[in-house]
Image 1 (cartoon, each protein chain N blue to C red):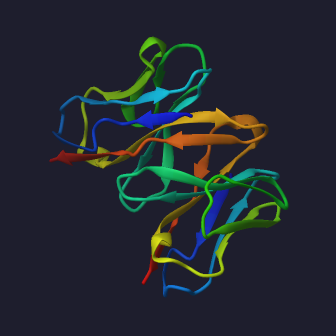
Image 2: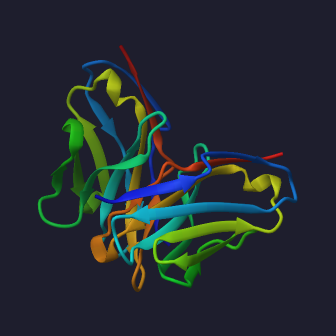
Length: 115
Length: 112
């Protein structure tokens, strides 16, 4: 069975600090990988995704993630965080059923940025 | 552009009462539709998905059911709520093989 692990439950950083949120998954086949973000009071929205090709993918708001197949990892990074990055971040892996995609989510990482 | 609506936004219900949460999608046709439950510190758990009208797949045995009476309408129901049904319920849609799901604003359900 697939699973997704996010190692950090709550991360607290100061503005301008660098960010890396860990995500590891377990699955024996080809994967699609996602990072979703949920800002306070807002919808869960897609931050970035990896389907194939360049393992370093860039998303919105200066975020990027690197797929390392040998490590089963898809860590999220941002070189300099802002107070507005305060949110909850979810890593997810796609499991394709016959005609629908079933995404398995990690438990989430709450990011708090001190101004 | 596509939009997804959920209502109500919040709901407080007594144990044993029925439940009906509604999700509708605009601006697309024949989407795949999903119901998730989000529990604090536990991520999102897939409850049901549907690839077409009247087609429902259940992921987790539970006190809930789902229906899709129209192409862009997805309903989550229960005949008798339990305390353990409390949570944040999210609806999502996906356009065919796009593999990217888009989420609604969610419904916060509290069962007392």
